[in-house]
Amino acid sequence: MPERGPGGLLHTPPGSHPLGRARRAARRAAGLGRGGPSRRIGAALTLAFVVLAVAGPHLRGADPFAATGAPFVPPSAAHPFGTDDLGRDVLTGVLHGASTSLSVGVAVALASLALGIVVGGVAGFVGGAVDALLMRLTELTLVLPRFFLALTVVALFGASLPNLVAVLALTSWGVVARVVRSGVLAVKVEDHVAAAHALGAGPVRRLVRHVLPLALGPAFAYAALQVGNAMLVEAGLSFLGFGDPTRVSWGYLLDVASPYLHRAWWTSVFPGAALAAAVLGVNLLADGLRTGTGGGDLLR
Image (tube, rainbow, N blue to C red; front, side, top):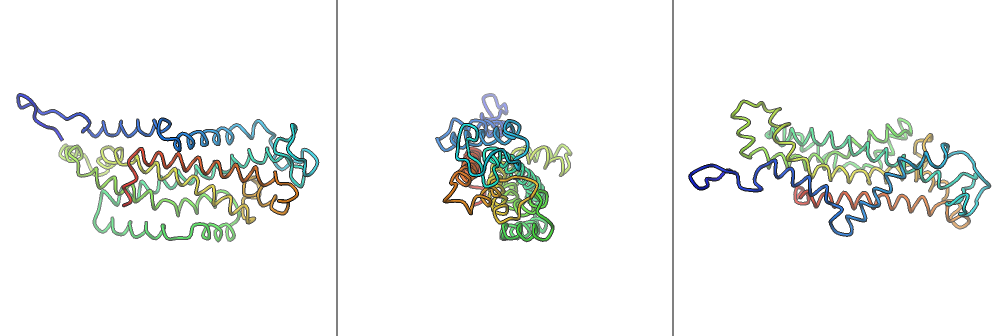
């Protein structure tokens, strides 16, 4: 809030301007790599996962379903991760599975972020009966069993990635909405929002231009957590045989390898390790982002 300095002139104390707070939050989010070891590990694992998912399929064969050698060849120079029961290269499958997991995780995170911003922003800014109604709807999405609901939808409407992304997004936005609502409630009472109102700014302009930019930092962190959750659900469905039959995923590779755990350990170890490392990296990075943006107290 502006204060009177020498001579009675108004000035804004350092660090109190809302744009200054937004810049500091952005710098904290950008500086996660300089934080604790868990943040650095998460950033490194996530970067490796993204690079492999984007570039890997172009570097190691275009068809992960094609047989490239004899069945059950152990790891070697020609097949670093060995081959499976049909002679398919496991490394090629792992790289294509990374692409599938990244696609599902990012799509679910972006969709849940968009829904959460709309619902949480409107609920926090409008308040009253609208807030109460939207928060009850939000609580309903939080108690739904996501995995079994996704299993039911895929079984009824077909095993495809769009169906999976849709059901996961529709059940993942609740936490983001609560975080956005908390941020909006805190920002909308500040002086710069009142000043915009006094200058004739309408409610939509105040919400979009003056409130949401200062309230969305923690929401991005909680949306990032949905990436790992979506990857695990997709892998679980594929392991049970309900994955997209046209796409290779880590869950599918684990399903194929499950009868041969004692005979060909590499067919399950490498896909399982890739899934565990990717989910761990994304969650560590998202948790570091949540801590860095001060989102840890918004749900309390």
